[in-house]
Image (tube, rainbow over all chains, first blue to last red; front, side, top):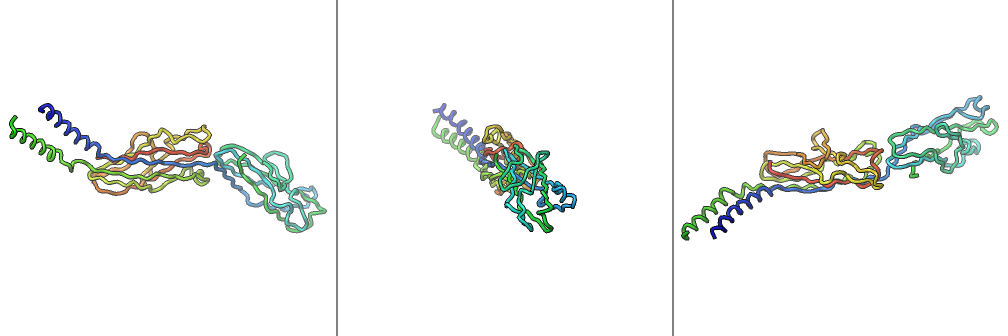
Length: 159
Length: 152
């Protein structure tokens, strides 16, 4: 009995001390974020304006004008271009294929309503890609007037 | 030992337990924190370089002076879906909402706030996860955080 009492007393004191230490409290929390594939395209020029000179009319081409595409992505991407309609809004049925484009120092090609790859790449931050345009001219067909073409469509998509 | 002496001994023990280790000495504390959901990172978040959760409340109560700490149970924020990238835990930053300096999350407890006075209240903490176009491939990233409140 004496042994029991002598043992019980320090145990009681110990348990009370422990209960003080256990007074600390905690809570847990999950910090979470989902990252999808993100692709961003901005164009530095929203329109192109050509004013052909007589010399250019005779040569058959306007000057070249660039559209700078700025790309950011955390996944692979492909940049495409196409025209949104077959014809210009013009005094005559000027075809979309009279608008030519090229990327960097590549060959000029006629724009069509079919999507064509311009360039592709991987994760990047604000890389710029210059795409140049010029218009094919014909003294016989291109009568005086205002010529509009809407739209040159750029798309940034998964490869 | 006589019955009287035994009674006296138990009485002394009872007085010792009730007076020398009184119940009011025991600190009653609690803390409550909800999950921190950053949602889905978008184009603007990448351009900002981070995704933000502002003024996340931490509810506390304590009958004595207190300090709150936070640490992560995980060594990193997880692996991208393609398995090529482990997002470091230090990309998760925190700060008290009314302060300026961001503190990288670690697995070691860092003091969030403290007070010499008990009571109950709420403190607001901002959390951010850094984003980089080149590194942060698609995936679900997370860390399991522990918030402790303890005697000052």
